[in-house]
Length: 164
Image 1 (cartoon, rainbow, N blue to C red):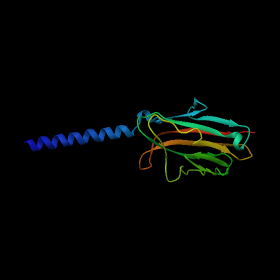
Image 2 (tube, helix red, strand yellow):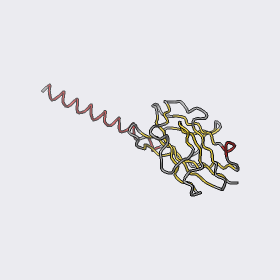
Image 3 (tube, rainbow, N blue to C red):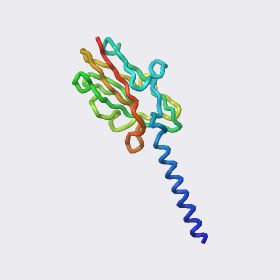
Image 4 (tube, one colour):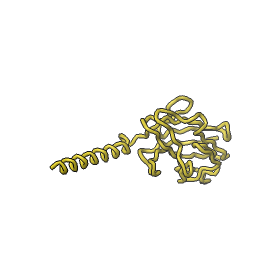
């Protein structure tokens, strides 16, 4: 009889542990576990940033704050480039720095930008700069991934627009 009690208790513990892990990975309302800031002001999802110049004068510096109680793993990618140049004129840093942001490639390549619980990225760790000379609009996503690299929660999207 003690053997069955023990097996029943173990099965119950495994079920509870499994449910807790599932709840942890399914973020409430699928909202991102982070907030994005520009110059100390919170940025809204789908916000558009318009620049009338190119190069370093058109740098968009962002700070990402982890609002969860655990380290988060972040990635970014170019969703759309209205110029048809496939991100060839977008210089950016997202942990690592790159000279071109290719569509549907997740950055940083081969790794993630990790932000510990309650902390935020350094002021220059996340920035975007356009070098394309004609009007262009870049739609960019930032999102969290799990340890296996799978997207979790909803992405944070913003638009970087050059409008001379």
